Length: 209
Image 1 (cartoon, one colour):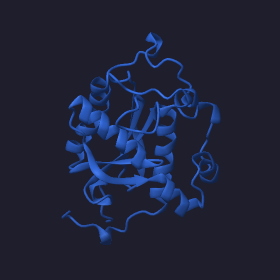
Image 2 (cartoon, rainbow, N blue to C red):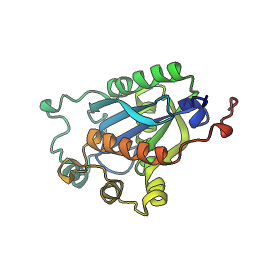
Image 3 (tube, rainbow, N blue to C red):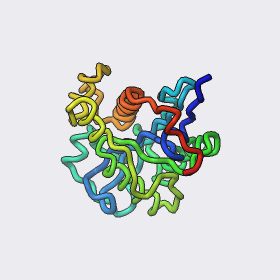
């Protein structure tokens, strides 16, 4: 009988969680976080990784945040404080995203979440800065990530998300891009697609991390 590989076995005790943020600029310490989305992942009994749960929140700019107009135009948000956005504080948004991640850490026995993203270090920087401001404990590893830019370069010879999706035969609509929720869902599909191309041989599974 083949050994069942659990998600903690596949990723050395880490729980991969796909994150995408939309922001009002490039500086995590001074520019506002505008939207955050997360997709949790689960591994089935055949060792295949699949998307599980999607969480999203629109975020109000923190007090004193810089709002780059060109960045807001790029993501299609004219007024981050508009009531129709139903935006919440960074604290509420992060707690909403982190709660199911923390629950999955307990469920899977993983020691830490690891952020998966397209240019993941950018997303991690904004998550860390917002968590520091809101005084919310982040479940993510402080500096390690899984970056689908590098993984896509290896698997498909592409680094641009839209072009990679075409190579991976994943449906992609440019009109929906630059929404954190849409980009996160699609990046999760891509990450699972790549991981599932290289299933882990049970001989390599270690029980100590």
